[in-house]
Length: 295
Ligand code: NCD
Image (cartoon, rainbow, N blue to C red; front, side):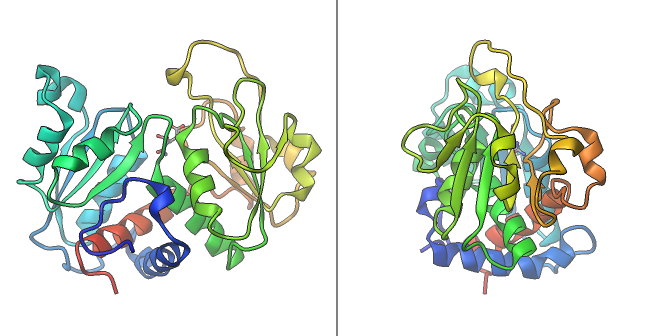
């Protein structure tokens, strides 16, 4: 069971029970995610954020979550260049070292498995903030929390995933988390970006074939930093949403780079900016739980 002292390395490790508990905790944190402070329950605790890959939302989100719980943050967003990684230090040794400064670690890395490797050396909880194409559990959690809040439950929903389902870690995390509930998956991807075979769902190339069946359209950008080449042309716009259910929601982890038109922002079904606030609440819930203060 996910709890006091746990690492969060893989979305797969979370049970349905863990997920429901995290959603309920996050719901309690939500009023404090954007203003004021929940309190000082993590006063005296230190979060270290170690980022070996670019980030705007995830790192700030973890840091804001810690501060709103009364804790403090030490941060290196440029680990590749300015940490001892540049001198050849092993991830395990970095984990051992940082866990002597911090009570909890959030880490992003460009290689699958690197976060688990650092966790081997760490005596404090390590939270995976994205590792290569493999996993991004806190993003999957905040996506699922966003859907759970909109629909009141997850069971029975049809989830369309559209975009880079091959190299994107977010679709993989969404699958591992949402598959703990009774959802149906539709994978919408061009040739070369398909969801790996081990994931079970309906597979289509063109979103217009399925748009009217979906409760959730989960969009992602092409992860061009993870492979060579290929031009892909897919886009969610207001015209497409004319064929969607009135209650369908559009989610996106952001950043967007052309696959999601700005005109969609004005549509009440667009939830991607609300997801950012939901993400702070989810990370507050996780920090509370792993530090031993979750209910
Ligand atoms: C995602 C990531 O880093 O995997 N971004 C995020 O955390 N919000 C998605 C992406 O970069 O496309």
